[in-house]
Image 1 (tube, rainbow, N blue to C red):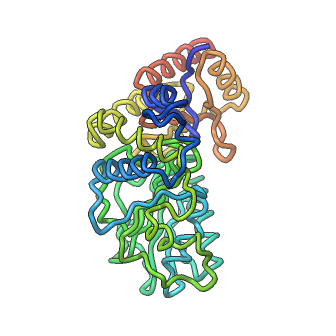
Image 2: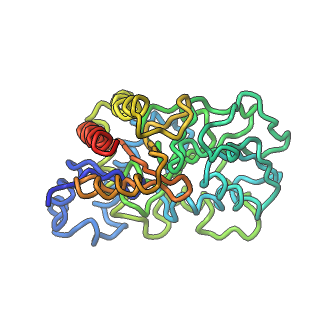
Length: 360
């Protein structure tokens, strides 16, 4: 069997070119006589891998000198605790809840201080992004927190909230490197890499250097202090070495594609094919307010659970994997990250059209 079109929300599709290159280097990485999987993280060869990856990411995103790039473990979910532990000084934080992950992050933060929910789209199953132009930001808030692209619900902030001068912290797990970003607008940008960048097990944290201090909440474990990892260049303990190696290859692949501006154009073109089809289809409907649609995750339904199930089953048989929607939305979801080729989206819409004709 050949490769399928994998629409999984994460772990997700990776560029074929990257996988082939990794396969070629699997047994012998550049004459070292061993795999990166077997290599000491203290070796010269691995130091070069992590240094190059960090430099390439800085170049891609235009990360200024006063920001640190950390490669950590524990996924985005561990950051839900690490962020308040490191950034809470007044023990007051503001969260905007636009989906399950922002909600989980806010619940975790409640263990450490007062959490104000500035806005939420829970009233309509998180199918839109609330108006964030004039929020009741707390005067003593340590930061304002958002999840920028909501994987499950398929929404994306097109404009960042006005935080009234407060620090902005953003989970960008599912839109990481999908478009250019102005890093200076954030105090912290972080994301698990298993959606748009690499294999599961690595989380990247981009944090302004003045926020990395010893002044953390009492009882914060050594491993959960940003300073621990910053001081050690992300090598305080054994890092997710192989994950970092693959991320580095994806950064290089992105540079080859023309960088993030080129990726944004490509992603917009790709998403338009699917959204245009949904907008004219008499069977399939998108579930998100059009102005808040994500370029990465596209949920859709037929309105009939049995028909949805049949579609997912037939799509799988035709080589379209992981199209079942998240249980909280139902229906289907196509995640069309950077590495999903245009042909994949074209093939999916052609299949949907055929299914619609056969099941009217």
